[in-house]
Length: 454
Ligand code: SAH
Image (cartoon, rainbow, N blue to C red; front, top):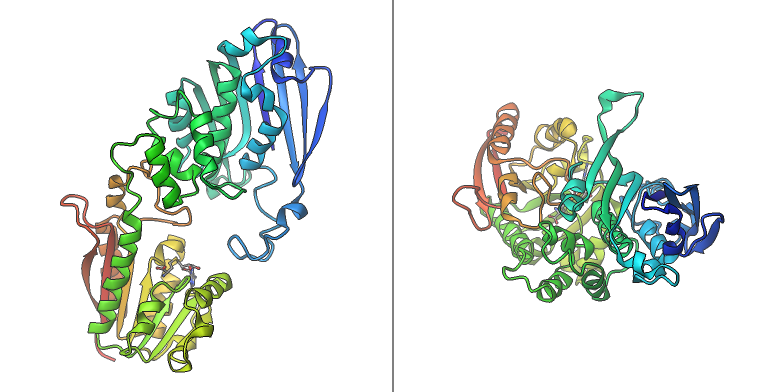
């Protein structure tokens, strides 16, 4: 991964003094998971460019990572980390340019304090949440933003865009501020950090964000992503930044509880005794189902073995008395392949699952659940995209979770559910879940399908 910094302030080679790196030399240093080099591809009176090149060692990177991520066996080795600008790059920036970040310069202090013309180039910057996110983050800070989206594969334009930008920024800022903004905002675009985030991160946000983050129009998003979506830290950060209205951080928790209660109630009133939780994840619905003796046979199914392992832990299966434990089976399988183990149940729940499948592949799930497994009742929940406008931490058009392939408005969900009902012989009714907004509807939408005939 690569970052270049160019200045046209004359004499441009003074950049060497500011970065504490002589333009005629190459600097190498080792990082916990790779190595980095700083060198100057051009250095003259008019223009001087410093390049930071980071080479990650995929094996060092994968250490202790097996079983994390999406669960794909090669994911620890085959991923975008070696080339995508991320917190690995910003950690290298801190390592390489620590003195410059503190704003000190032995030989050119006045220059270090001064706003200088800079150009920044990041050839591969992930932009989760749409290509315009870089503009929304850097634009309000006074940069000219030129972001070109890389195609997934230049040989196959029909495959569409990747989520990576070739980004160029230009602006006039003190070097210290430029480096602070890059180190805080690159991981925000990536929506990830490779290190454990604690309340020290709030102190960093205050220190590096001083003078520009407090009133940034995307501050909520920046805080939320910087703190890796951790509610407790967000609450502290809101307090630290003197937020007047609390960011809607409490909502997802209570919404989750309301959703589980609503689904459990539908399953219970359907009279079901043998139930399926399809895409059960770590078992949030399985817990109340186990606690309700009406459900005598419960199956939790998920495609991800890692989620099933988590469910075992979350439900403390090992500690449950055998009479309770024996009512539950956890099975691994994909909802896109017909599966005889799913036939003959009274009811099935798909809680926040359909949006994790590609829309173009959703028909396979429809066929498996409604065509082949054919439970008497099917309860499906999914986010209502209209309601996202109420979440101040989401950018426009941004999904609630980075793994969501789509989020539907109410008419789209309704049309989908009615078509599926029609095709497979189910009647369908719709119910809101969560606090309803008069215009936008409820945060979660729910469809309850009832099989007509055998
Ligand atoms: N129902 C759970 C989890 C929702 S997250 C809850 O409400 O907490 C979506 C889940 O669907 C994930 O656990 C994911 O592993 C699972 N999933 C995604 N695609 C799947 C597929 N094709 N077959 C089965 N499960 C799938």
